[in-house]
Amino acid sequence: MAGDDVVQMLAVMGPRLPVVRERRGVTLADVSRATGISPSTLSRIETSRR
Image 1: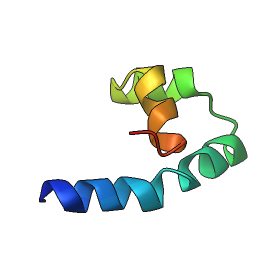
Image 2 (image 1 turned 90 degrees about the vertical axis):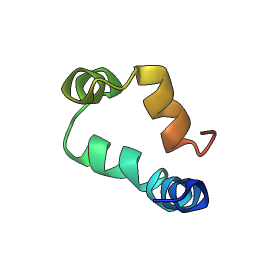
Image 3 (image 1 turned 180 degrees about the vertical axis):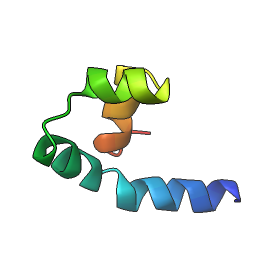
Image 4 (image 1 turned 120 degrees about the vertical axis):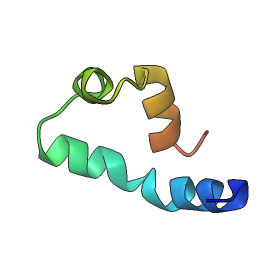
């Protein structure tokens, strides 16, 4: 996947992540532990700052 494709995918996916996460009752810390991605990076993905 090219860099532009990743940026585009994150821009579309990011705002959807907190909706799904909250619906399932999962915190950023929970997702962080499960994925190995830091909570701050996950937060930036969710808010389209990454």
